[in-house]
Amino acid sequence: MTCIECKKEFKFKSSIEYKCPECKGLLWFKADINSIKEKFPPIKIVNNIWDYRFAFPPISSDFHITLGEGGTPCLTSKKFGDKLGIENLYFKDESQNPTNSFKDRCAALLISHARSWDFKKFICASNGNQGASIAAYTSLEGMECLNIIPEKIDVGKKAQMIAYNSELKLVGDTVDDAIDYIQKQKDLSEYYQCTPELNPLTLEAEKTIAYEIISQIGKIDLVIIPMGSGQLLVSLWKGFNELKDANIITTIPKLVGVQSQVLSPIVNEFLEFEDNNPTNKEIHNSLALGILVKNPIYKDLAIKCIKESEGTVIAVPEDLILTSIDELIRNEGIFAEPASALAFGAIRILQQKKIFKAQEKIVCLITASGLKAPYVLEAISSQTKTTGKGSIIITKLKILSQISLTSIKGITGTKIKETMESITLAAIYQHLKELETKGLISRKKEGKKVLYFITDSGKKVLDALDVLITLL
Image 1 (cartoon, one colour):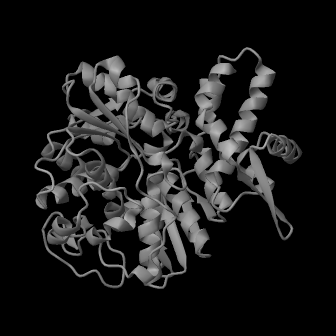
Image 2 (cartoon, rainbow, N blue to C red):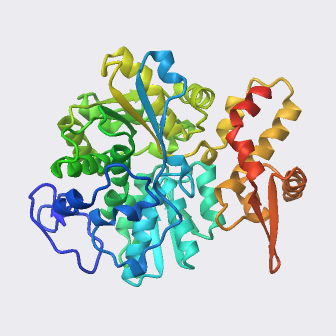
Image 3 (cartoon, helix red, strand yellow):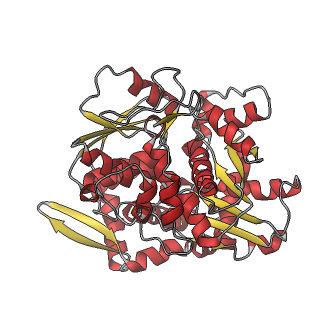
């Protein structure tokens, strides 16, 4: 491991460290550039992140775990690029990972590493995506998982954690409070640390997104990235920088970091603006819950990476989120979470500011599925005139999305009820019966439990969500 500040190197032995023991700078893993140069696949369909194991710290293949994470498509824009006159616009769609977010990459690497160290218990503070992924992968291995989360997170992420039998502890208003809580605990020696900001293996997992983009479409000019802690942007910079050092690419693409205007500490410092101090009410009313971070651990490093790439930052108004989600659905067939919608919403603003040229290759990162935040279904479809019918359809879509998000091991009606407080258990079972009759879900009995799974027909309904919303 190398300290980013003082450049000293340390052996990675028996514990997870993220700060230099001498200068307290952030640590990350020093890549084997020669190995990358020799083994990086120039054009290849990636099966999962382990195809890039040559760029990871050594973990025996005996401990590798995968659910098929990675290898997500980099989609050519169908309509939106043409509308704006952008010749080469792409969407890196991380919603197609097993639990529908880019954090599945992290879960695969972290849980594999933890298995090699014989851990049985895991702890994670997050805004939701990492916690949901860790819960899924630990459940697969029959391990214990404790998720520390803010009181308000996207309901789909919380539903995934519940469905995968994770223990939940609610702490504070933002993920900062959850991370502070973990750092104040005196003895967590039994737990493997899965908090993304506190485990530098997260950077290693997420850098594979940069690797894949280059494998899939070659040299690019600019990447648009949602930012919370800034870690994802740093991960991509690390991946691109390693490829440059290995002479696989000649230049690092410009990195554009996007935050919500509700809370944008990285943007404010980059632009030398005075920090905004949102109230708890503003935070709770925000749709971009996945990237609301007051004190980003990776802020300074993210700013350094953006500047070195000759990129920029932008804070996008939250009133663009729902229209961006809707526009992304109708133009590209992608249903994105609010954080990704902010990145999509930034494209027009960046074009107006002439940040890129029409012929440049632009990649917009879609970090996770909008199914994780199903309340957006209600907002998008608020134009319905048949309130009764519309609310019934929305309830069914919410239930269907919860089942889809837990398709690895199924979910019970009781677990669905825990995330939908406004509806009775009897009503949930009635909806489940109707969804099953229509062939959108199936059931499987395990002991006294009845587990529900989404069918191919159900997946097609969610894939065609834009059509359903239009018809409401």
